[in-house]
Length: 170
Image (cartoon, rainbow, N blue to C red; front, top):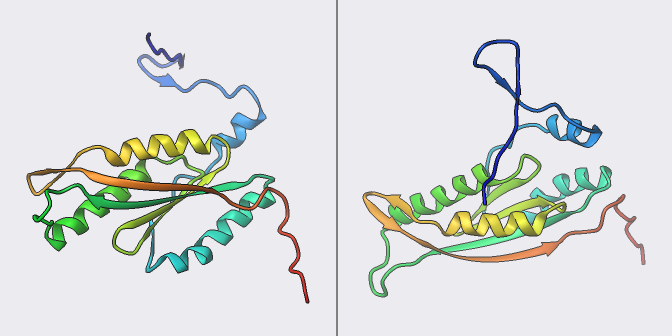
């Protein structure tokens, strides 16, 4: 099985331009801004305040979102824990690997010392979540050590698309 891609060659020698968008949805995808920075949150309780503006934007566009919660722990030999600076660099490397692997419409937050959250656009969220788990589980090289993370994930559906319903008053 081979994967091939086609490109349109421009009039200049040796320069290759990306293929032309075929429909309006591809044009909209081409205008998506580049991924933002990794948000740093102190705890899981701060997650709702971070998530709501981003989920609200998706609701206004008629889409829904999914939240991928990621908890990481180093896979070490029992009785030989990692030193705190090495562990911090390992989790930071995982967060940056996540950020580099998500789609432009997704958002990443680092939560506390061992947690991360990725707010995924619902379109293709399950496939994106599966890919992100594989990316996080790969080996890391920190201080000439080859380290591996245990990754626990939870993918939850957020509120359905459409405007946010009004609050019910008792």
